[in-house]
Amino acid sequence: MNIGNLIYQSIHSIWGNKIRSGLTILGIIIGVAAVIALIGLGKGLQADVQSRLGALDASAITVRSQDPERPQFDRQAMGRGVMMFGEQADNALTVDDYQAIRQIEDVAAASPEAGKQIGVDIIKDAQTVSGYQVTGIDWQYLELKKITVVEGASLTEQQIESSESVALIGKGAAKELFPDDNTFVGKTIYIDNEAFEIVGVIEGPETDAANMPIRIRSTDPSDSIYIGYKRWLELAEEEKLPTIVLTAIDEKSVAAVASAIETLLLEAHNIDDRDKADFGLMVNQDILNTITGTASSFAVTLAWIAAISLIVGGIGIMNIMLVTVTERTREIGLRRAVGAKTRHILVQFLTESVLLTLIGGALNVVLAILFGQYIGEIVNFGSGGRGFGRNASEVKPLIDFPTIALAAGISVVVGIVFGLFPAIKAARLDPVEALRYE
Image (cartoon, rainbow, N blue to C red; front, side, top):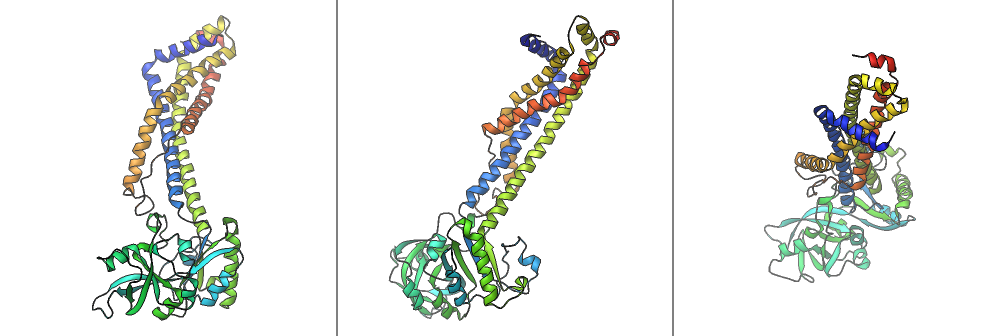
């Protein structure tokens, strides 16, 4: 059978039943458009998550004090190696713990992170003072947190070890305390009525915790004040540290470093049962894996939901083709009587089924893009346009050529699969009985 004639006859048959064929094609259009739109939405979600996870260093580890009496399911709610931080527990990490952690193999940089809201002013014994987050750190902290010194210099290791009363001040805090000045290095501030000399002005990274999917810190470095951790212990009248932050030399070393820290601290704190530990580890790599895995699973789920609508469209094709076979029974009998073979009948009906899906697939592209944007607006409206973070951008469906090509290919497969049974039924009709059919 000539392919051109076969396609012509199939188009003639489809055109001869405009309403029925149109409704069938509409089902395919909706199904394919749903596939493109929902897969695009899933890809857009993954891209949005990945773009904002870029600021989360996969090699970073946080060691934080925790209450050993908290229930295990609460302390390990996010799985082994990742803990959820709730209310601040009593400080449990000693300076010796910190020094020992720094000596662990494959630790690239480490620093205490001991924060507390303390009254700060530019006048001693001021009647009213403003509360600022005052954080005790070591000399590698700025590197760990990607904080930049925009004026002056950072704290030196010698200044920290000798507990000198020197401070780094955030650019925002400096402008609040000294609104009439443009330079701040060398000026004096009073933290809890103790004089500190400003040696440097700092500014946080462009993408800080406010834009990250998990808020690790609620403070902006530009609005904070940093002093040496030993001086902080004296000022806050504390003997132990609440938090130690560090990075491994690379992502491959994270698991080994985390395990070494856990072993070290369990032994140092004389703890036999790790479920009763007074410290917890938060590994950024585990958070990244959890979030990206969830986003990927969500994208796959959307694809399966879209596939259901395409299957419904395929069932519609099967029903229409079965009706067509019944209506054209005498035609089939006549064609068989004049010499048409079984494969000719099979190929003709299968071609009609595939053409229906191809026409529907060809018409779905514009609808899919509009449908995808509409779904994106619904998702963003439902989340207040905020996504995962406070200042997060809207989730935009990512509809690319591979997605459209995949959906079009699936539509052809649907046409073949759901058109095969009616085509086989038509091809197997007995010519004599078909000619007698009324």
